[in-house]
Structure formats: C-alpha cells, structure tokens
Image (cartoon, rainbow, N blue to C red; front, side):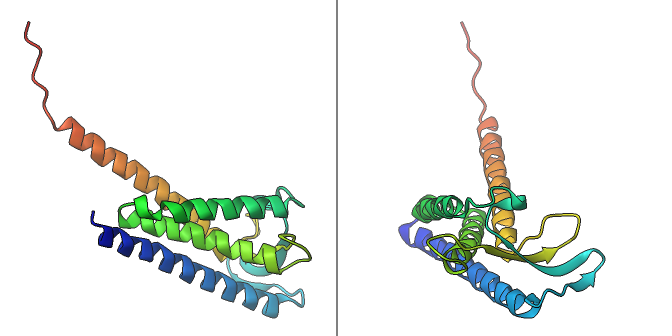
Length: 173
C-alpha cells in the first residue's frame, strides 16, 4: 500500500477515535447532569441509566488503582498511535480507532474527575442490572478489541487459504 493510502487509513483511526471521545464525554456529561440527583431512569426491560463512579477498572476490580490503570491506558494509547502507520485494512483502523477513543475517554475522566494526577473516577451509567455498569468508552474498547481479534483471525485465514492454494511438486527420488 502506498504511503498516501496508509496516511488516509491512519486518519480514519484518528477520526473514529475523536468521534468516540466526543460521544463518550457528551453522554457522561449528560449522565452527571441528569442523574446526579441519584434517581434512576428505567429505559426498557432491565436496561436503566444509573450514575456510578469507578476509580478502579472493569467490573469494579482494582479500586484505588486508578493512577496505575490510567498510566497503563496512556501507554497503550501511545503504542496504538505509533502502530497506525504499519496497519493495513479498514477493520484494523476502525478497531484501533475505537480502542484509542474509548481509552482516551476514560483517561479524561481519571485526569479531570478527581483530586490529583489520575485520581479521578470514571463515570459509568449504562446499567442492565445483571451486568456491571459501564459507559460508551467501555463499549468502544470492547467492540474495538473484538473487531481487532476478528480482523486478525480473518487475515490469518486468508493468508492460510492463499498459502494452501499453492501446490508443491512431490519429491521424486
């Protein structure tokens, strides 16, 4: 792929990440403003909007480890940004953009929603009542991760299929 083509795909990741951050932060601002009085909005079936703050990681684990988690997430974002030029394909770009955007959305909370460096809590508000409460950034990270795995699996499958179509001549002794 040409350098211009790779730059175009890198831009796709950046745009996807930026959109993910904006949607995440807008929905979190809505949740804090709308649900800050402690009430819960029932949406449908078991889905409700219920404001919660998480200073740990997924599923409420690692409470109090916010700074470590925030720094680790920042390192992962930097590594993914540096990898943009080496990636090919739209699935890789979409998945990377979603992961970067989701991670940055939660890093913003850790930086600006607390006292001290990375001591903030992540705003969660999407609650199915039978699953831990989460937010749009979490959705982006998980969907991006799933897309990345699927992309790797499909790429390996295509490469394996291409390799198997080449017939080797039998050894004649």
